[in-house]
Figure (spheres, rainbow, N blue to C red):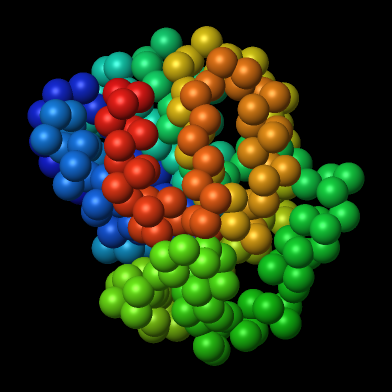
Length: 261
């Protein structure tokens, strides 16, 4: 497992989603590492980590690796910064070890089952289909197209950023983890829903929610669920930002996180 470790002080852990890797958080790390220790991992199958082709990549296993890294580094009093699939993969640690988590920063993610949500369930069913897996295996659809589709109108991702976002996944042999986690958006729905049933464990942890309001993948109705679950959380909404607040509007995102810390 590859990870970045910059700065000194209380640890801030950045946990990426799909298609993602530690590169996503470079702006925030450059800022926050001046006064905190910043750690950003690449999940197995992503970024610069190993990409075994014959492995399940079930999110429960990836979440266990997140915990394993933090335990292995002996981290105490951590702040978790989670985005996209990084929500379930990182917040599982907060649910299991709430006493070691001093803060949560939640950005355009989820932690509940899609059952009963026909729109979301239909989308996840497509992502788990054989047709989508075939297209992604041959054309890297998720790595190439998804970031462009879900960024907002105010500051869409630059060509350079899109190139680096997709870089670790351009070879077919390097997409096993990516394809598996996309598929598990549908097949691991019950596992994610099980985490949501434990959400009261998060209520006493100080939390900041930063939300790109023009994200078609994680729309504002998702934000309302977080607000209901974490009524004491601070909330920063970015009206012209899509799925990537840290990339599309890094200054406002960094300021909000600095103030929270």
